[in-house]
Image (tube, rainbow, N blue to C red):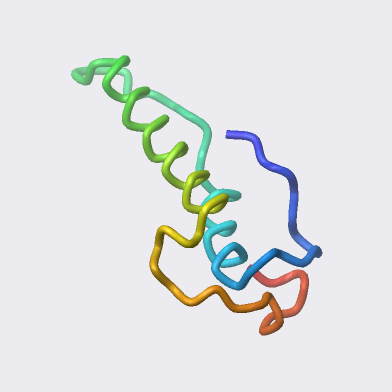
Length: 77
């Protein structure tokens, strides 16, 4: 999952800043070597990555108030 580095920048909303910390720190896919289907692992990894990106891009689906990103310093996540 590749996203623009937003550290040190403003976000459209506080919700986006909070969700970005999950998007930015989501690890690359590394399959377990034994006993678990590779395709299943990859499917789950991609599902979580896609869900995080969807929430980041459409924070309104969380049902939280959309407030300005004015509560943290630009470097904070």
